[in-house]
Image (cartoon, rainbow, N blue to C red; front, side, top):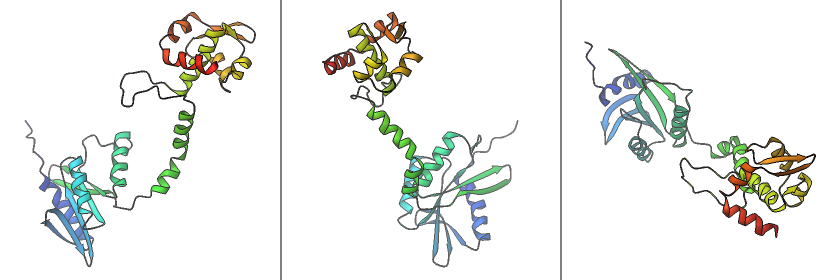
Amino acid sequence: MKETIKLKEADLYKPIQNHFVREGYEVYGEVKDCDMVAVQDDELIIIELKLNLSVELLIQATKRQRLSEQVYIAVPRPKKYNPRSKRWRDICQLVRRLELGLILVSITGKSKRMEIIFEPTAFNRKKSLSQHKRKRQEILKEIDGRSADFNIGGSNRTQIMTAYRENCIQIASYLKQNEELSPKALIELGTGKKTQSILSKNYYGWFDRIKRGMYALSEKGKQELEEYPDLLDFYSTSKD
């Protein structure tokens, strides 16, 4: 039976030391609470070693940024390492945002090697905002489509009141009050430019086309609409 060797933080030291020595640095372990330091002329690099990438490691590394702009965290390469996975990309985004470098150490038997995944660099907030401008606009558009806050932040396994769902409830409310209406009449009541599309697609099965250009609330719509008393009251009052 193959013996499982328990990894220690000290096992990460040698391959990282060898790398920076080859790059012309002098490397020292355990200097003033820093796990590793590498020095070349006036340049100081600090590397913090841990067996897991944790909040404690990130806190420790950001404290080292008081001493140097060149701070790395080093952890063992994950057994199921997938650089394209969403979780790993999110982790890397967080580490980059903290302006830290990331080193992974692979240990297989007696073989040890390290890989610098990325260097510590300044985070460009303006560039990040520019790259995610579309997502920002989607959030603002969604907010603009809601009449009020009908969700509780942090809720799990509960139905989210989206702008689209609220628009459907608004249409259903007016149909309940008027029995039947045309898309044009609904738009005049304030249901918006998506009215025709909502009625035609009938995603929730709430609407019945009773004749050309005229719609009414289906039985399913009548039943499910009662689940939204606050919105029913709101659209009844706003219409008046």
